[in-house]
Each structure stands twice: as C-alpha cells, then as structure tokens.
Length: 565
Image (cartoon, rainbow, N blue to C red; front, side, top):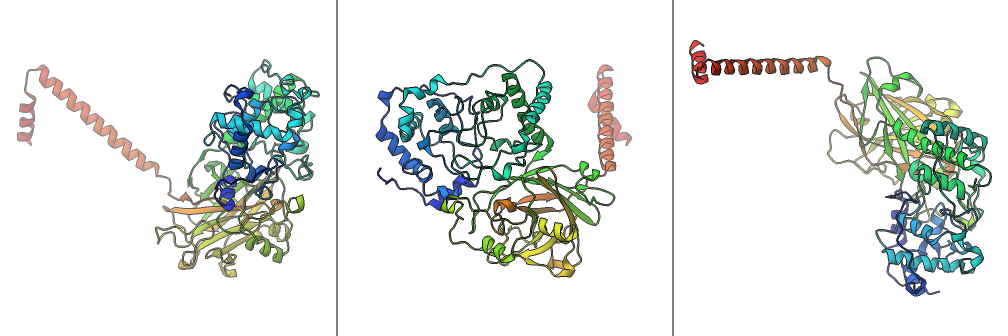
C-alpha cells in the first residue's frame, strides 16, 4: 500500500486538536438520517483509498490495524479494522455492522475518544467511498454471504407501558440484579470493583463508562440508544449484549434508569459559566464538604481539558469538569470542589519519579503504549486553585498554566497522600509559580494559612479549601477583597491515570464574584420610590381628566398652580 503523499499539518498539532476537546455530537447516533447507500457501481476503491490516506491512516494505520503513527498517544487506541469488530452497530453481538452503521459513526464520531465527526470535512459521497475502502481490510468477512449483517439486525420496539418514574425504579432493580455495579459502580461512576482490571480484545486496559457524564457515553444517551447498546453489546470491549439474558422489557427499564443517571447529574448543577458567584454568610464557614451551609451556594460546573501547551503535554485527562461552590464571610473564604474519580489514589509516590514524570519529557506527548501495553504511573490525587498575585494591579492575566516570569500566580493545593498520611490540615499547601520552567515553590511556613479537608465517596472526591481573605502580608501573597471580581483557574490530578506535574486537567481563567448581596432595605427604598412616582402620576392623570371634563384648560391650570407657588 502506498504511503500518503498529501501534505498534512504536523502530528503534534493534529494530536492536540484531536484530544484537547470532547467530540461535539449534533445528533443521536441511531436517529441520524442516513442517506441512501450507493450501489457498488458508484463506489471506487481508489477514491476511497485516497480519502483514507488523507484523513484516516495516521490513527488507524496504513493497513487498517489501528497502529498508525499517532495511535501510541491515544487512549483508547484507534479501532483495528482488520478484525471486522465494531462497537456501534444495529446488529447482534459478534456480527458485522451495517454500512449505515459505519456511516453514522464516521459522520458523528465517537464520544469520549479521539475519533471526530467527519461531516464538516467529508461529503456524503466521500464518506460512502471511504466506508467501502475500510471494509476491504476485512474483506474475507464482508464479502462472505454467511456473515451478511442485514440478516442480523436488532429490532427496536416500543418501551413498556408505565410512567418514566416507574421505568427508572424498575431499571435500578435490573441494574443491581445483573451486577452492572461490578464495573460501573453503585452510582454509575465507572468505579466498580472490576474497573481497574478490565481489558479489551487486544489485551489493552479499558475503563467502564462513567454513566454520569453524558458526552462520554458512546453512541448516545437517549433510552432508545441505550436499549440498543444493551441489545448489541460493544464488540471488542467487556460490555456484553444482554439480548439473550435480559428480557426486552427489562432492557428498556435499564435504559431508562441509565438515562436518568445523566439527567440527575445535569439537573443538580445550578448553572455553567465563567462567573462563580460566591455566597456571603454571617457566621463561620463550614469545615466539611457535607455541612448544610453549602446548600445556600450556587454550584457552577467548570470544564477541564488536558494540559496541551507545554511538554510533557497530557492528551488523555481523566477529569473533564469540576463542580465549584464558594462561601465567604467577613474574614475567610471557602471553596468546595467536587469531581468524579474512579479510584482514591492516596499513596505517596517517590518524589524523584514525580519530578521526572511531571516536568520533563523526551517527546512532546508521552507515549501511552510502549511495547503494546499502556504506561501507567501511579501518583496521588490532587487539586489546586490558582489566582494571579497582582490581579488588582494589572489588566493582563498571566498564562493559565502557572503564570509567567514577572506575572506570578499563587496556588492553594490539596493532596490526597498527605491527608491520609498526616491528616486533613497537613494536606494543604500554598505555593508560588512564575511559569513552567520549574515546579511551583512552597510559601514560607508562616505564610501557610489554608486549611481544609477531602473525602472520597462512591467514585467522587469532594474537597474543602479555606483561607483568610487577607493574610496581612501585603503584596507578597494574594489578598482578596469583598466586592472584587477575581480571576482564578483550577488544576486536577488523577493519580491512577499517571497524572503529576504538568500532566493534569486544567481550566482556563474563570472569575469569582465576591460582591456582597444587596441589603433588602435598598430594595425597599427603590420600591417605595416607584410607588410614590406611580401615585403622583395617577393623581396628575385624575387632575387632567377633571380639568377636561369641567371644560377648563390644562395650561391655565398649570399657570394658576405656578402663580400660586
């Protein structure tokens, strides 16, 4: 097979584009309106090969075996086409996909992977041409009438009668009885007891889906889509088909239950955006994440992505959003930070290894699959809040990855290993960073003012970080003032995913609103002014009408009023 001669941007740039943002799906996979499949007379292998070599081979390999030059940097690995095994299908477990199934996947991409949707880049005809070529990698299967996938289509009927609430409740029973929690966890966060040891058909590590994160669920989150997945399975993965073992009614119930896990999480979040509204309380701030005082604060979900600016860049972040609540009083501020994490990584790693893994790299992107196995470093889970030191004095924000020389940032960090080794308050650090040339440095011991606590429950960390608004150290540290709009960003490390140092999830700059709530007396004054103005206007209208009825001039009336005055 000839090598692609089409000029293409550098692999580092391509990889960054593929892995630093989730696939944006514009329609549910099964609901996509698929154009009519062309006849074989209108398909040309040469055309399909040219499209494949221009757009596909660098991930899937020249021979379609999933071993392209970018594949060692991707997790999960690109699909091996030579086996004819595909996740997203409308056919029974172990069967080939329909051509229409392949069209849907190429058009929309696959959520939670580096496979993008190609609709903006390839015409419908080009997509059909490349599908015809891809099937040629397993031609012995696709050309054998015995394996005709059109004879193995899974029928999707109608959901059973009953309210959605009843279906969800019944689905929870199906979830438990069929031990879905062994992989996906009690609350669907992908943290079941078998999660850490799962592998795919190529003996590579694979993680069960976090059913709380809708955009990572492959193939869609509607009950119809989920019913289809439970019926077909995801070939090549440990996710089996339940068509033979779970009744049609129970599969529908399970689908409604799993769909509710996504809906519940989304509805629990009050809003998404770049402004985090802090809530002022009159008394002391909470010390634990479960304290009831947090109920008064608005929760904002802040999106995270992999650190892809400086080497070692991190293309497979485990944490993709963090839920933030903020409370403050006259003296202190408290953050409650929560994120999904399958495993509580609380073991301290060797400091030399942490430094080597996190701040140096032979390549721009770490290779994830040396010798066919995924590289896994094990480090501590951690989170930090980053704030520019001179946010009040400069309109220019420092770089969102640890600032710049001359424009430093302060960091309020919590680490799981230190909490479990020394206790809650010993797990908190205040650090200073002046760019990425070297790791952040600890503040002096007398400047360590933050306290807090972290707890991991059912696949989710919740961490509280508290600090005085003003530390009385002048410009040497961040000083917070009520009434300010404060830029801040977040960094999260998932130790089991090999994250440490610059290999992390991070946010861009967002803003914390520390304005105090307006006193109710001000609202009362405004309302009183409005009422007085309305009453005065009403009296003027009555007076004008009275003058008109009596045949008197309004102008004369005003002149008389002025003269009397």
